[in-house]
Image 1: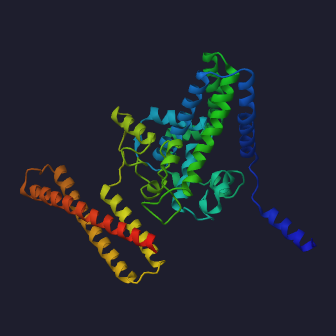
Image 2: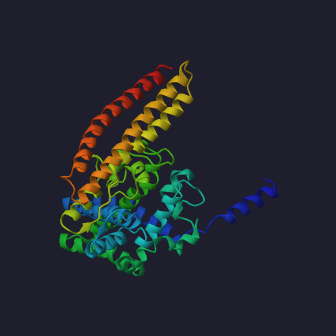
Image 3: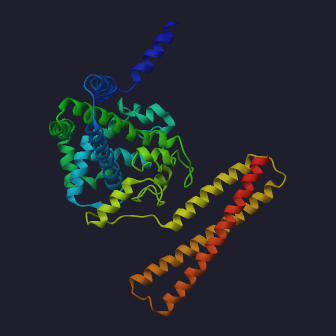
Length: 393
């Protein structure tokens, strides 16, 4: 090897960001204890249902504090919660050891503002699975983010957020040793609980959350947006408390839901809804159904156009024209429906429900409902025909 090659490699190595040794040690120590210490203790002393239940409940507390608290409440302002709920989230977030809510939300807002930008997105999926999953936390890749909280000025007015940020280290140590110790004293096995509800719970909680930044940008479908790497994946949602419907979230980030269908697994959505029912949360934000349908139609249009452009068919130009015509007709119906629905909402607010104008709006609404259903069926049938053509080529 020549001197120049050695010199170039040394220069490249010297340009690498500094290693964040605290993060590296936390990940190494907790993973080692979880992978070696937990099985050894189980072999020699054994575990029971109490250990399993406590560990699962603690994983749930950490996970929901991140998804319902750090993510949907503080990062996206998808709803509002009272002080008691916010304090519970703040303690749970420290228990999850994922930095303060202020820092976490700041990073996450940068991620949404510059998704997939390797220079600006803190955990850009375009830099690979390892980087987006955990690598971005091991070196000072964007050191300016550690002190710049200009994008979370609203959170700096939240006393709970600032209390947690100021006392984050103390809260983290107290929660991660205090909670497992307390459970261990009650259960009668302190060491077993420290290992399972402490170390094992933390490692699982970490990687479950990290999967949202990595796997949810790699594996799944894109029904709402193809402009970034975010994916919808019901399987990932099972382990991430509903965050697996990530393609929807990136397009409608202020919606308190991620899984919008009743059958989609989104316990975070159910928790937020329950809190609103008992009066602990309010101002739950939902994306308009018509806008959701428009996003799906636009995405389907983009995918179909690209597929048609990449295959050889004698009637390709005709099919493209028909595709655009069907798309224009369907989206126009949706926009007309959205306008009528907005008129109905305004009439409802003004208590004009019995007026002739309101009755006309209702009539238009009913007509458009029927037309949209017909147009949706035509749109879907047309795409089914295109699918058959793709398969035949």
